[in-house]
Figure 1 (cartoon, helix red, strand yellow):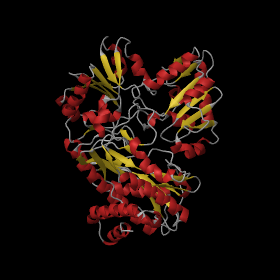
Figure 2: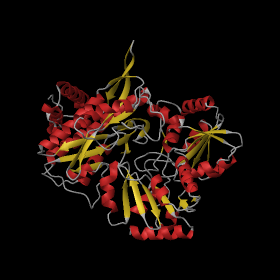
Figure 3: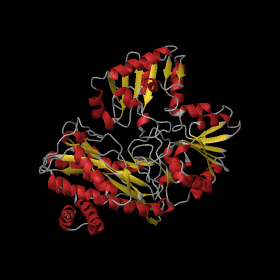
Figure 4: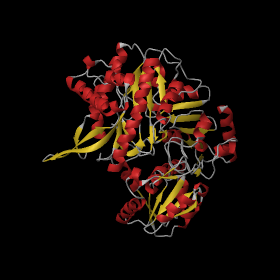
Length: 596
C-alpha cells in the first residue's frame, strides 16, 4: 500500500518536474501533534509516531526521526521501501546534508508551503539555489492522491473561565501590546494554536488531546483580529469576543490579508513557527522582527491561581493512578489483561474524576520489550497480554479544568530480575536527584541536567531523550521554553532561565531493546527559596502524588540521602492522598509509601 502511494506521489512530482518532495509532521501552525487531516507523513510512509519527516525522490524514500522512535519506526517501515534515517546518530546525514548530496544541478525541491515553517523553508531555498534550482510550494501533492482524506476539524470552542486562568484576556492583551511597544513593532502575527488559546482564554478540540482552535491572530495596539472557522462560534462566544473588541474573519483569509500589510510597518512574528506561505505573502517592504511570540514566555510562568488549580488536578490524577496501580497489582495474572485493556481501564478511572476533559496524550502502555520503545503506542496487532512478571511502563496524563498532568510509572507485575532492579533504582536515583535540586536563580535546564544524567554517565550509560519538558495549562502537554536537557536546543539561541511558576517534568529512563524499559516521571513547579548574600535560591515543589513502585527498588544501591529523599516523597504522597482512600486501597497506599 505504501509503495503504491509513493508511486502515485512520484507521478505528481514528475508532472511538475519536482526532484525531491518533503512531507513533514505538521499542520499550518507548527503544532507538535496534528489533527487527522494533517497526518500526510503518516499516510505516505506508514510510520505513526508524532515526529518525523519524509523525503521522497524519484528513486528513494527516507524517514528522519529521533531517538524516541527508532525501534517503532524500524518496525513500521519494514517492507515499505521507506528507509529509516536515525537523526543524530553517527554517520547518518541530516535532511539538509542528504538534500545537498542528492539534488542535481537545476532541480526543484517541493513541499506544501503551509506545513513548513518559514525558517526551514528559507534554508531549503538556499539549498536549491546552491544547485541553481528552485522551490515548488503552492500545492499539497499528498492531497491530490489521498482520496479519503479526513476533513479539517471544526470542533466547538469554549470560553475558559478566569477562575481557571487567573488572568483576564484584556490584561493578557495589554501585556503583549506592551512588549510590542518595547520592540517598536506595529503588528504581531500569532500562528501558534497554543498561544492563541492562552491569549484569548479559549479552548477547543481541533487536535486530539490538545484543546486548541484552528486559527490565526493579528494584533495591533488598537485591534485584535481572530481568523477562525466562523461556523464554530456561538452567539455567546461572539458576545465574549465583542467584550474585548476582538473581531473575527474567515480562517483562510489570513493568507491574503498579510499581503496587504502597508509598506514600512514592522511585524513581530516567529518564523520558526509561522509557515513559509505566510512569510512569503508578507510584502518585501514590511520589516519582520523574527522573535519568539511574547506569549510563549508569559504562559510558561503559571500564576498563583493556576498553581493552586494544578495541585488539585494532580490530586484527581493521583486518585486515578493509585486506583490503577492497586487494580493492576491485585489482578494481574487473575483476570485477562493486555496493554490496551490496561490503558483503557486507566482512561476510565481518569474520566471518572470531576472536571476531567480529556487525556493529555495517547497513553504509552508498554509491557516487557515494548517498554523499550520510548513512545510506544499499542495497536491491535502489537497488543500483548500482561503476565504476573516483569515490568510495565505506563506514561499517561489528563486534562482537567484545573490543569494538565503528565506522569510515568514503571510497575513490577511480579518477580523482576536483579538487572531490572538495578536499572529501576538507577532511574529512581536520577529522578530524585533532580527533583531535590537547590540552585541559584539564573540556572537553566542545561545547567541542571547533569544531576539526572550523572548516575547514568558514571557507568557509561545514557537515555536518548530530554530529561524534562515544560507543561501547558490545559494546552499542549509539551510546552516550552523551559526544559531539562544536556544539549542546548538547536531551535533556541538563548537557553531559558528557570523562573518561579514554571512547571517542568523530570523523567529519566533506561531502555534495553528487546527486554524492557523503565521511566519515572513527575511534574515539578519551580519555586523561590532562601534569598541571602549569595543570591536568590530556587527549589522544586513536587506536584505528582503517586507512589514509585517499591517492589522494583534495590535500597542497598541507594545512599542514605537518596533513601531519605524517597521516604520524604512517599510520606508527602501518603499525607496528601490518604484522605481520598479507605479500606484495602488505603492499606495498599500505606504499603507502597512505606519508609525503606
